[in-house]
Length: 491
Image 1 (tube, rainbow, N blue to C red):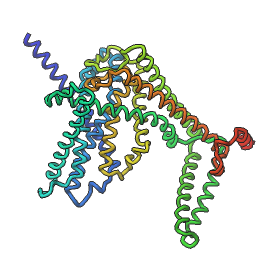
Image 2 (cartoon, helix red, strand yellow):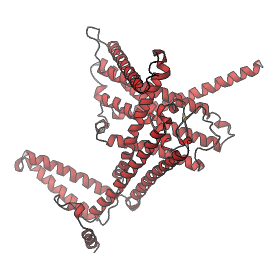
Image 3 (tube, one colour):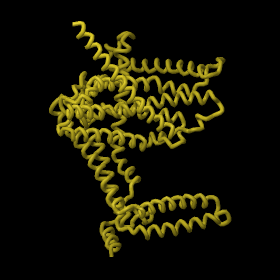
Image 4 (cartoon, rainbow, N blue to C red):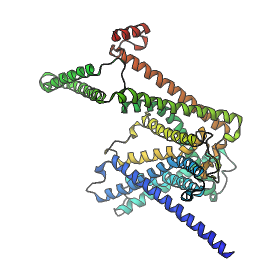
């Protein structure tokens, strides 16, 4: 009997050691990738200065930002890893080499991501910001530790302020529960704060993702060679080169012939013509397959993914009306390898993973494309440390809300693990139903608007109506003029 107990304890010990090693290796890889990303965008002048103290403080803040970004990437990969792990165990149920991939490992990953994400949002990132802005208390000895003391004091004051706000909010919403003592800080107030942060992230995803889904078409189009209807590339390129040479000659004699204002206008025109010439040369060098097939296939793929997301959300709305079990909920044991989380098997699970990653990319594109957050867009080798901290916080809020976002919309049937499934608002039918309806409506409206505008823009460009003066409204051009212009170009 004692031998059996020892063997069970040894097995549990080995399992825990194996899971710890896997988590450490995964996080180390993500940390190195995140560090390379941040070093690509950081401003080198802030880390190579004559002041050793400032350089040390900036390096420590950069390490904290790298930790936060790696946690954000891990939060994005939570659902894909969980779904793919379940399908791998279904495909190889008796494989000895897949025994390490179990529910305990996945559950531990979810708990670690939840812990580290909240630790980064509540403590590490505010400390990094206060640390970079602090100079030490007046009269104290200068140095790194003096700045640490000031940052810690400011962080404690911020924590008291946030806890006071949470207590007031809970008193307004749940008066009887808010009268609990401070001994319930860990059991009630912190989970309440986490629930509010998650709700903010999910609402931010609701605003950014539909806009990002429509922006994905233009962003992808800028990276590919677009086919042009009724356009002669060689003729257009020759005219552009001639125009560029003319502007270049005018700029060379600009000091004597033109005033300063005209010179600035001409320089902008020259840069625009130069970029147009580069784009036309890329179009000429592109192969016929790349020029005529790559762009339509990419647009069709984006359209298919977006329509698939909308259809899955509409199907989830019907399930919410018919069955309360469709509400997002948490589970204690994932029971991996028992059944597929998609009715279409492994193919459906792969589609779910692609859609989850596509929604995350779209939300990031929509976030940086919105007028409120355009200034946060990082620039290579020209992003200061304060912008890096703001970007890491924003990406962590979006990524930590992605599992709840995907499960709430019905993109996947994999229920939330750990503390992700204990948010107060997940069990509210009206909140979840209204959220699904808003997402489907906003995405459909953005998609229709993007497609119709894209078709209209290509027709106007193809028929040469973009050369009309600005006083003429292109929307008032009759269809007969479009048809006549198109026939004249063909002839």
